[in-house]
Amino acid sequence: EAFSAKVSRAKALNAFLVETPDHALGQADAADRARAAGEEPKPLAGVPLGIKDLFATRGVATTAASHILEGFTPPYESTVTQNLWNAGAGMLGKLNMDQFAMGSSNETSYFGNVISPWRRKDGSNAPLAPGGSSGGSSAAVAARLCPGATGTDTGGSIRQPAAFTGISGIKPTYGRCSRWGTIAFASSLDQAGPMAQDVRDCAILLEAMAGFDPKDATSLQLDVPRWEANLSSDMKGKRVGVPVEYRVDNMPEEIEALWRKGVEWMRGAGAEIVEVSLPHTKYALPAYYIIAPAEASSNLARYDGVRYGLRDLPDGAGLQDMYAATRADGFGPEVKRRIMIGTYVLSAGFYDAYYTQAQKVRALIARDFEQAWEKCDVLLTPTAPSAAFALGEKSADPIAMYLNDVFTVPSSLVGLPAMSVPGGLDKQGLPLGLQIIGKALDEQSVLNAGLAIE
Ligand code: GLN
Image (cartoon, rainbow, N blue to C red; front, side):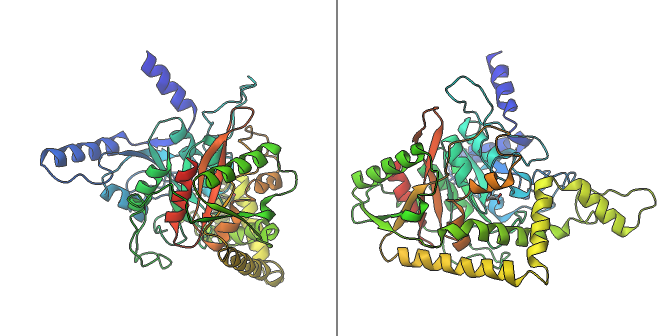
C-alpha cells in the first residue's frame, strides 16, 4: 500500500518518459557477478541513473520530448551514456525535458509538464516548475527517484533546474563531454553534465561521462582529471570574484541576500573576495537568443519526415507537402519560434546585422572573462534571478522566460565550466542556487568552491 502510494506520487511528477528497469537491473547484476568473482568494482557499479531524453540510447525510444521524434528508436548509443555504462551504471529510464532542450521550465515538452517535488510554504499548493530544460532530471534527483541524472546545458539547462530543485549540477568546459549521439540544439554551446545530490556525486559522475571522443570534432583531446580525488573545500589562497554587472535591475532582495551569504561562506572557507567587472554582460542574453536559434534552425532541418520519427503524408501529397505537414505537426510552438528566429537572423539581408554582430559580442564577452581571470580564480553569482516559478506563470511570455537565463548564458557563450549548488531556501521555503564559474578546463576549482558552499 505505502509503496504503491509512493509510486503514484513519483509518477505524478511526470519526470520519466520511458522506464528501463531491465537495463538498471542488468547492470546491477553485472556488478554483483563482478564482485562475486573478486573483480575490482567499476566506479559506478550498479548505480541506477536517469538519462535526459536528449541522449540517444540504443533500442530505447529517444524523442527529445518532441512529437516529431515519436517512434524513433536509435540504433546507436550516445558516447556519454556509453561511457556511463562502461563505468558500470545502469539506466532507470529516459527523463522528460523541454522539447529539444528549448526552455527554462520544462513546459515545452510534448509529453506534459514535469512537476517539481517542492511546494511553497504559503499553502497555495501551486505546482512549480522544476526548471528547464533538464526538468525531468532535476525533479527525479530532487525527489530521490535516482541518485543522479544526466543533463545538458546550452544556456543554463543543468544549472537553473538544479537551483530550482535544491540539487547540484555542473556544466563542464565545452568539449569535455562528447556531443556524439546527443540530439543537437546549438552545437557551439551544447554540453552534457551530471545532476546529483551533492558536489562529490557530480565529480564522480562527470569523471565517467567526460573524455576524448574522435566521433565529435569539438571533443577535447585531454585526459579526464581525477576531480573526485582532488576535491577540497579549503579556499585559502583562492580569489573569488563577484561580478558587479550581475547585480541586475529588479533583482529580488532574497537573491541579493543569497549572494551575500555565498560571499560570507567563501570568506569563511579562506578565500579572498574581489570585485570584478564583466562589462558586456548585458549583451549576453540577446546574443545567446540569436546564436542559439540560428544554430537550432540549421540543426533541426534534418527532421523532414524522411529520416526519423514522425511522417505526415496527407492524401495525394507531394514531397514538399509531406515536409510541411510533418514539421507543422511535429514541432511545438517554442521550437517553431526558434526556427523562425534562427532562419531570420541567418537570412542574406540580416546576417551581418544579427548573427555576425552576436558573434562579435560573444568575443567581447570572452574577453571580459579573460580580464576577470587576472584578478580571480572563480566567480560567484546567483544561478537564477528567482526561485522556482509556478507552472504557467511565464509560459505565455517568452521574453520573461528568456530573462531567467540572465546569469547562466554568459559562461555558456564562452564554453566555461559552471556549476550550481544549493544556497539555502527563500521565504517560501524554496531552494535557491549559487553559481560558480571557472576558467576553461578548471572544473576542479569550480567543484572545490561548490564543496566549500555545500
Ligand atoms: N533556457 C535556455 C533556452 O531556452 C537554455 C536551454 C538549455 O540550456 N538547453 O535556450
